[in-house]
Image 1 (cartoon, rainbow, N blue to C red):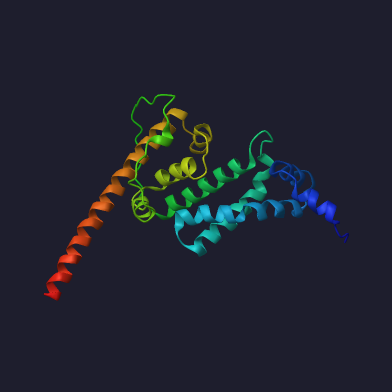
Image 2 (cartoon, rainbow, N blue to C red):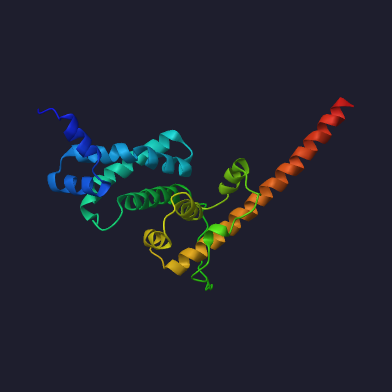
Length: 212
């Protein structure tokens, strides 16, 4: 077995994701797939973890996604961005698994809604009312699809068109779902703050009662 020189190793490390995909498809050498795996395994794992919140389950999902990826690489279009394509597979797989395991997600009934083409979705949740610990609690109240679409847009910065392709819906429908999901998240977030505020006050009253 030939040992790679430092120059050869450095060259391979400089391959783009898309070049590695083409090399793997053309040669079927596992080495190229392993390069892709090393670049994205942790990222895919953490995306899975954001859905299932269980490290063992996230590892299983990651394994399944890369196993699925081996068979799907031949369908990858060279004019696309590999990371976006991989994340779409990741989100679809995670959401499919959660839909089948949890029957609690509400079904969207998309009603007609006018959404301006130039709306700035990044400014819909402005203000100082965001805290990570309360935001996580609020996210627990969202459905699989609601969390998925918010993660795609605000964690991975996927375009409206990319999200539309993943969900197989129109770009207008994506904007509508983002608006609804963000409004629901805001509402649940504020409810969480109010609940914790009331709970804190009651605890103070209870402590004072026992002290006195």
